[in-house]
Image (cartoon, rainbow, N blue to C red; front, side, top):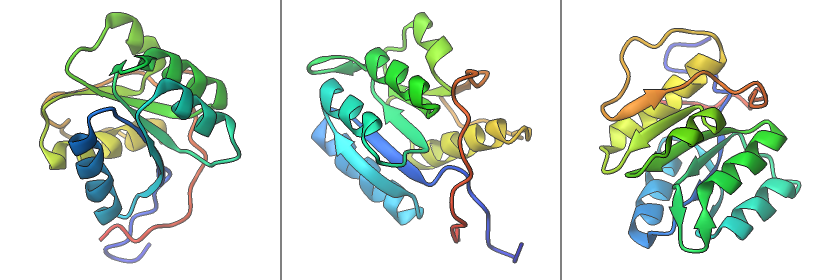
Length: 156
């Protein structure tokens, strides 16, 4: 590994958020951090359709309360495909813990979102995380959510 390069297993992200400004900011932040946005959707049905398509997704960034239903349904569909889930919400229900790799409370700082994704990635790889971001809770990775190694990405 070269100095400044980090091999990532989480590269392709599905953003499921029904607040347009938050969705736009999240897309911009993750793209700038060299993540690939598979899609940004605001409905349960659209998110499930992306997960059931041929799209490669490493992580679903998911709000719990969506305009047309519950993000828990999306998390279940992600689990069926072995895709890790990071809930980003102000209202996290206890039953969602079994479906997610972690939860980041809204509102959050941009660096905390990146840190939460990195903590999930480290957890999946069996590495310890020194410090968790503010407002982030890391859960045991559900058995159905291994992340396949992604392409090497320059994470500078």
